[in-house]
Image 1 (cartoon, one colour):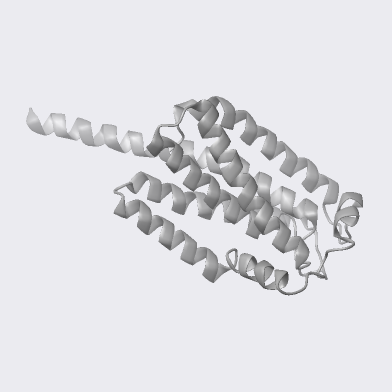
Image 2: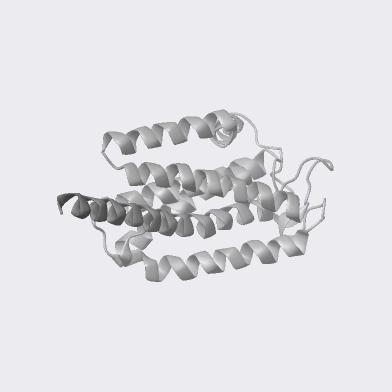
Length: 220
């Protein structure tokens, strides 16, 4: 699930993304107001998008809601199983679950709020989820198509950028998150997904080795 051609690039990218998540989280821990960068971006747009773009933003936002996210995960897992890629299906489930869990944990640790004390905002879980899903699909496609380092890395990063930008725009436009929350969510996915893919490969490879050992013992 983590093509060898991409490991040299995705490892440092994941480490840098994790560093960004931590640094931004520390900077805005316990805050309830937008920072300087946030204010520069959201003044003309926060919660001010009008139809038809508001409908687009709401539809995009739905993809990160529990019902929409579950639908996307089930559909993607079903596609992986139809293609007889159980390891890919496991990556989708594990990657989505760990990304959402990490974002949720960070929300409580950082304690940044928006629109009141109960609305934890950093990092954006919607952005983290949709970016993670796009990343995983791109990783699966890279492995299936046998893409090299440059083409594979370009595909993975482009998928993450497009998905994260689309959801991030929707979150900021609807006033649900600050731009730095979106950055934190995007980087959370970049940090969690490569690590999850590596873990899925390790677990699956060990299981295959155990089954092979059991088969050899049975033939003796």
